[in-house]
Every structure is written in structure tokens, then in C-alpha cells.
Image (tube, rainbow, N blue to C red; front, side, top):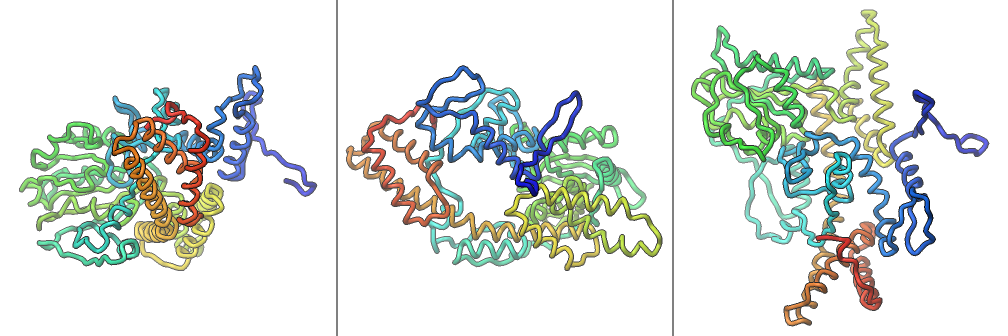
Length: 508
């Protein structure tokens, strides 16, 4: 809007006379898309038109559409940016999510919610699956909290002190301790490297692999495990290696037969290129020749989302008292926006000191400012305070290497996210768990009134009513008492209306 109060629309002129809108940030683009979509939505009963652009929606879905339209639009845009063999794969039984950032597992029985699954299926011209309504709700946190003080012990990789403290806040009576390994760990961590473009990144990784699998004057050949972030990058790396590593295998999909990888010992000169499938719980048998040469060499080709995932990946080597080595080789372009920005920011002291040597800094300054501008514009208003906090952290803390800087920024972001999870997400999980227990109480009464044999149609109607209420009426800002009252009131008003539920439109 200009000074005269008139709206100004920014347009980008393209080839052949085409033009497109330009938006200041993602949030304004979403708002504009929502306004545009609402223009074409008509809820029945209404006057019918011959205009084929109008979408007629059954009137009983009005509340659902109004409640979920914004997130549906967000997921439509998100589906455009998601990549196959990164966030998902296409199997015979359909489009399947991949937990690429933590476990690398292809999650065969998982579906994205709020239309994201369907938008991805549209993107690839697949048959649309049915949208799900969640009626059975129990979170991992809620399940463990039900045990109260009856949990006497559990084991796992705790990560940094921040993550340990978060666990103690969620499970108030839990105590943690570090259990030393049975044998002293002989892990040597090679200094990490950050490449500034993907071509240089692939070259560094290939050089690190060939240096380990080739014979030298002071040691024999070793075996190498390469852990990639996504299936696609693992395939690209295998292709780039080519004949440099003739004895290489892929371990990228749990739907494939991977038994041969674990059945035999890893011999000298062998290379396994894997995703995070190999970074968690996998135990490789190492030949005596490889152990004598220094053990398995692990190359982590991305910066893990937290210290815990990194520790699990490096834990594939130097096991049971045998030696081993590990190295991080990261591409700057693959880092999250904030981490990439802050790694560039950490270069500034060196760049300023080089002024005395009359080095031209214009290209470095331009690169940093472009990254800062892109990061600032791409984040929403509610994330600006987090961005400011991380910028203050980067300006006040000092580090002696780029990799250490990247890890420090990552750990700081993890701490901020954990704090937000405890303050915002945990109360929401508790409310949904309590509401689910309240719903189960209503279901128990239904069974008692019908001698434990309620009609299937009545049970289906109750499940649908509960699932739709969660989608449309649940508000995390309301107290649990208020939510229970509203759930009871809406249930009674639904009973009095005696309206048949369209069960065929919502499939469970």
C-alpha cells in the first residue's frame, strides 16, 4: 500500500508477455492464495452456475473446509517443494514417507495428514488415497507418562545436556546418568570439512573414500561407510565414485533385501553407501585385516539435525574396543537456512582482517548479504525473534573452525526448538490425550447401554463425530475443562439434531 492509501501490486514480467505476482514473503503469498481460493468455493444449498471454475462443496462440510483451508493451501505449496527420494519414495503400494533426517526408514504404514499425501499423489499423477480422520489418539509422551513412577530404567543416546534437561522436564521423576562403555573407545575423529558447492563436496568425499580404500606405505586398505542424508544423494555419490571404488554397495531402502550387507564381514577396499538406515542400530562385521589397518572409516556427508544422531552415526565404528575413524564432510548449500547464514557470518572476522592485505571482499560481502536477505524474507513473522536470538549468539560466540561454528549454531537451534516443544507442544499433546480419554468414557457408556454389543453404524458415527470435532473445534488455546464442556455440548446438540452422518465421505 502506498502513501495515498492505494494498493500496489508487484508483477514480474516474463517471456512472451506473461507476468506473475510477486509477494514480500511466504505468509503474504499464502494469504493471497487463500483469498483467491475462497472466491471459487460455493457451499450448498446455493444457486448453481455454468462457470466451470466454481467448486461446489456439500453444506455439511462448511465448518471443516473453513477450519482446514489455510493448512490445505500451505500443504499444496509444500508438496511442490518436496522431492522424491528425499522426503518420500514411490513403492508398488503407493507413495511412502521417508524419515530421512533421523532413521532413514521408509515408513510403509505412514501417511501425511491434512491433504499433503493427496497433493503429492496429484503431483505424480497417482491414484488419490482416502483422507484419514484420527480417532485413536495416544502420543509417545502420553503413553510413557501413564506409567508414572513405575519406570525403573531405560537406555538410549541422550545427546547434549540440553536434551537431557528436556527429558527431565517432560518426565519429572526421571534421573539420567552416563554409562561408560565396556571397553575404551578408540575413535579418531578427522577434522571436518565444509564445501561451498556441491561439485566440490562430491570431490572431497570421493577423495576421502579413495584415500582410505587404497594401499599406502604405512597401512593396508580399509573399508568405508558413507552415510548420506537422502536416497537421491546416496545414488548420486555412487554414480560419481564410478570405477574409483569397484567394491561398493547401496544400503538405502528397508524395503530391499539388505541381508548380504550384514551377513559377511566388511573386507578391505569395500564401500557401503547408505542413508541414516546405517546410522542407527546397524552393526557391521569388520574383518581382521580392516581392524589391523585402523578399522572402519565412516564419512558423514551432512550435518545431522542434532548431536545425538551424529553420535549414533559415528558409533558404527570403533566398537567393542576395535579402532575406527570418522569424518564430517558437509556441503554449505545443504545446510538449513539459519545454519548456512551463520557459518557465512563467522567468516567476517577473517575477512575484516584481510583488509590489511588489500584483498577484494566484494564477492564475500555480496554472498553474505544475499543469504541474509533470503533467510530473512523466507521466514515468517513468528520466527523473527528466533532468528534475532541466533544472530546475537553468533555475533557474541567465537569458534576456531567453520565446522565447529556450524555445530554450535545447530546445537543452539536445537535448544530453542526443545524449549518451544516443552512450552507449546507438550501442553497440546496432554490436552488431546485427556480429550481422547474423555471420548473413551463416552464410548464405554455406549457399550454399557447396549449390553456390550452396540451397532457398528452407531460406533462408526461416534468415531466420525469425535474425529471431525478434533479437526474443526479443537483449539489449543482453550483450557482442558472448556474443551471437555464444548465436546459434550456439541455431542448432545448433534444427538438432538438426528442428522445422518455422511460416513462414506470420511473413511477410517
